[in-house]
Structure formats: structure tokens, C-alpha cells
Image (cartoon, rainbow, N blue to C red; front, side, top):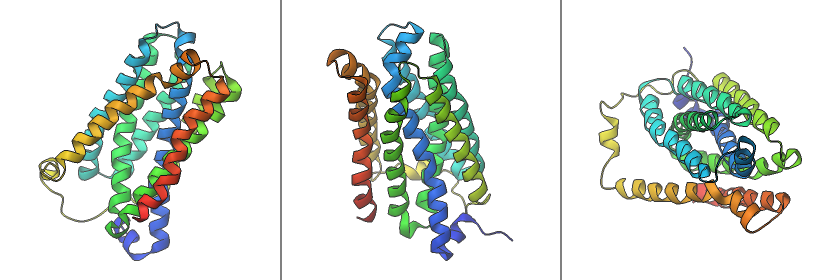
Length: 269
């Protein structure tokens, strides 16, 4: 009988490390895509001939997809195999991050970003669940690895886009291919059965209590502020302040550098 992810994570430090790496790799692609879109947004708007306010509409669609499907992803993690949930949602994400780079109309771009948000919402919730639950004793280390790889993705994306600008098609293709690779790795490494503990009948009710309400509200306002900033950040840097594309790439990549530097001590705290 094959071991569950929980059993591997508890019995073997090496096995736990492998599960942590596979479980955290989705962070690399989600923040690569997010940073790529933030950096390339003005070029997408210009190429598709959209008004400036569409930057807000597109980031709102992306955020709505994440918000709705994070809830669904968390539910699926508790009810079904995280392996299937994460793999399928990464494949959806990968297809539509590629579509973002090749969209030619407002509807195509909007639907691409909305469905990218769907995929992110589902696999973000489920893969973080894998990291936190594989071995609860090392939960901080698992989520630290997510933050560090997210920082790597955020840092790398602008520099990969920079040589191709104003053309942005190939970098989004690279983002999608990375997604397919991560999906394959996750599917091959994470066991089909995550754990054998009895599942709660109403996990959402258990999750909402006096200890969780404040963090939930804090995350709402954090996400509201962050995505509003990211939606217009590149336009602000390149058009308003008149920075060069290279200077804009450096500044946007700094968002990831901070995650790498401060993610490490946070995991061991």
C-alpha cells in the first residue's frame, strides 16, 4: 500500500523536503505570471488598443477569479485529492496565461486574465494546504518555501520580458510552458491520497471564528491595496515618471527580492 503525503512528511525528512519543493513550485509560476502581467500591462493595452481604465478592469477580473476560486480550491482540498485539484488548475492557468500574450481583443484579454485568476485561486489554496498539512510541525518551513519561490518568480519575470519588448508574446508562452512543467512535477511527486484523517463535515464553519476573522479582514485590505497598485504600477513608472523599460524592470523585480529576503527568517520564526 502506498504511503500518503502526510505519512511521508512525518516519517522522512527527505520525503518532506521533496513534497515541500513540489508543493511550493506553483508559487513560482503564479508570481512569475503576476509580475509579468504587471510589467507588460501598458504594452498589452497599447497593442490591443484599449483605453487606460482597462488596466483596472483587467486586474479586477483577475482578482475576482482568485477570490471566487480560492474558496472552491480550499473546499476541493478538503473533499478530494489535492493532487488532481492542483494539477488540473495549473493546466487551466497555463493555457490562459499563454492566451494572455496572444489575445487581440478586449474580451479575449479580459477572459484570459479572469480564467488565469480561476486557476490561481484553486491551486494556490490547495498547494498551500499541502505545505501546511504535510507535517504540521514544519508548517512554517513549508510556507516559507512558497514565499521564497514566489519572490523568485516575481524577480525573474521582468528581466525575461525586457529583451522582447514591446513584443510580449513569447514571454507569456514561456510562463505557460513553465506551468505545464510544474503541473507534471506536482502530479509525479505528490501522492494521490494526502491524508487519512476523518474530514470535517463543515470545514468552512470551523474555519470562521474569533481567531480567524481579523486575519481574513487584513488579507482583504492587503489584497485590495496590492492589486490596485500592481494594476497601474508599470504604467505609472513608464508613462508618468518616464522611467526606461530597464529601470521599470528593476523596480518591479524588487517586489520579489523583498519576498526572498524576508521570507527566509519568517519561516524559521
